[in-house]
Each structure stands twice: as structure tokens, then as C-alpha cells.
Length: 471
Image (tube, rainbow, N blue to C red):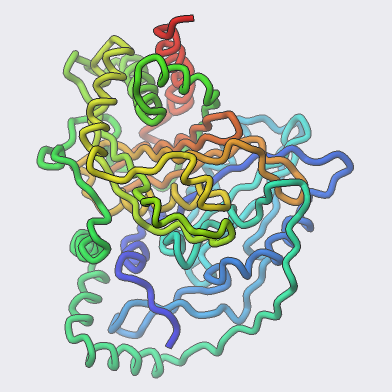
């Protein structure tokens, strides 16, 4: 029988709604090499060469009649790489604003469930000789073990493209409905509770499913004590629409390191403090009531791999799915940037003192470009919790501090696009890469008309913290 989706993966398919498409995205900006060579045909060729590294990307979901068992992954006999790798263009000279508007529109559209659940877009026409690659991958696809993000496998550590030997791919025969039913019946005989579990998943009982999976995985989710209380009221928790806005912010990693060294905390503490300051300024700009005790609760997924989990070979590609989620109350009511930082640092130290959260050096040694996959795993972790527990998701994934290339084109920046959960108007993802820290703000189009204002306040919040560092 074809491989069956896990209970968690299947829940992402069953729970997908028009207002909450379950795909994770990324926007990578490249500088085209002199003399060309990085165009649509070259990108398609590169994907064709590397797709054998991620076999799941040539498979589609096939449902079992009557939901007698979870769906299965089957080879797509009509797989067409040109359908998934697409081309778009901006009127020259394309601006960042035009690019973010295009990203918002692409991310608003759900993926086609009759085909492999991913898309990639080459966006041409950006100013200053740049091009962008936008990826969309369904959360059911990316588990960090059998599948990683497609945007990760096209990258190389030098301008020299890794050459892989050609492999002849022959799709396996598609099972008939009768074969799927027989397979489901055989599973039911060996595991009588399977049918009941499948019915619960299909009916949308995601919390039961996530709880079961979390227990089996050995406490995949580590919920902080704050979960016992509901999240504070916030304009970030509203009924959302089918449309999105997207905005970005660019900062320098050295600034976070300076603040970290001066105040004896972690870079992640500084990041969350910067987000707190930006949210505070944004709330005040809206005229929202902000008191000294005001907080915004963030779900912060972190990788919790141990040293023994790091693959011995840099070509392993397996990142594992050990992602722990912490609930952190961001002190948006505190006017002092130093006090905000200390409060965030104390809260994170309480959460991670018994965990195994991973630093950037370990993630880089894992091999490949981990951020797209780890943002996807973070989104998966956050999707299992009720909107009543937190106001927004903040995923922070450290990346390699050296340049990466696709078909000879140097990647300049990479912005994550973290999906929105039901009742969540904002998700923030950020990745450090080659000396920069890049924020991606994904917001509901109706609830967040001033998303670009919030993104612009990141620099102001970071400058506040830098002003407390001795020259």
C-alpha cells in the first residue's frame, strides 16, 4: 500500500478552509549573475535535477472512500514540473511594494488538492537586476523528515551548481478505490481504534489528534503555564477573510548581537523585545488602549534538537520534527526598552531552562538551508492550539551566515510567510541570513490595512534598544 498520511498531516487537509489555507511560503531575492543564466528555463531545469531529493513533491493526496482510513500519498502519473514552477513579472523597474502585493495575492489562493501540494514562482522585473523566487508548500507536506521545503533543495553553497546523476523516475501504479478500501479494512482489523480516530480527524477534532500525536512523539509541544489563562484581548484576534497583506522589514544581525552582549541575553530575546516594541508603537498609532500591564501573547515555536540529533553527514537533509512551542507574554505596555528586554529574557529563560532549544551553529551544521523547513514546522506546531491561547505566532529561525546560490545567482534575502490560523490576523516570521535579519509579516487584508506601518516600526524598536548600548 502507498504510504499513509500521519494523523497530524491529515488534520491539516481536513481543517483547511477558504479563510485559512494551510500552506507555508517563502520569498527569496536573488541577484542575477552577469551574463544571465538565471531565468525560468534554468529554474525549471534546476528543480527537475533536485526533485529526486524530495520524492513527496511528485506525489499527490488520494482520499480513501468513506474516510475509512487516512489519505495516502501516491505518485502523480501526470506530474508536470512546469505546472508547479511558474513565471510572473513586474513592470520594470519592479518595486518592493509591487512584489509584496504579488506575494499577498499568491498566498491568498489555496493550492490545488488534485496535484502535488506545492508551487514555485519566478518573479522577474525587479529593480537593480534582481529576481525573486516565491514558494508555497502545504503543511501536510513538510514534516522535516520525509519531506522538506522545495526552496531549500535548489540552493548551493557556491556558484558552482551541484550536479546530480540523472535518475529515471517511473510513477508507481495508482491504487484503485477497492484496493484503498481493502487496505483500510486490513488496518482496521489490526488496529480497531483506527476507524474511530479517522472519523474524529475527518470531523475536525484537531486538538484530540494533535494531543495524541504530541504524546506519541514525546511531548512535541511544550505548553507554558500561561496556557491556563486565556490570551489578552487584542485587535489581532478577529474573524479573518480569504485575502492577505504581506510586508517585510530588513535589519542587521550585528545590531542584535550588540544588544545581546550589552544586556546578557540571547539574540532570540532581543528579537522578541524588538517585536514587542513594534507592536506597542503600532497599538498606540491605532489609538488602542495601552496600559503599563498590557501584553500581547505570542506563540513562539523553537527547535529542540539535541546534539545527538545532528546528522553526522551534511547531506543528510533530515531536520526532524522536534519543535516545542512556548507561550510568551510580550510586555507591550512597558515604555522602557531595557525593561521590556529583561522581562522577555526572564520569560524565555523560564520556558527553556529545561528544554533543548538549538542555536544557530547547530542548525547550520545540520546541513542545507534549514529556515524554510523549520518555519513550516513552527507553523504546524502553532496550528494545533486554540486561538484563545495566544494572539499571534512569531517564528524565528537562524540561518547560515554565508551566501547561498541558485543556478549561480546569489541569494540576497529570504523572507518567511507564516500562515494565519483561524481567528489570527497576524503572523510574523523572521530568518537571519548572511549578516541580515529578515522579517516577513503576513496579515489579514481587512484586519491589517496598516501592516506596512507595523513593519516600519521594527527599525524604530531596534534603534531604541541600540540606544541603550554603550558606544
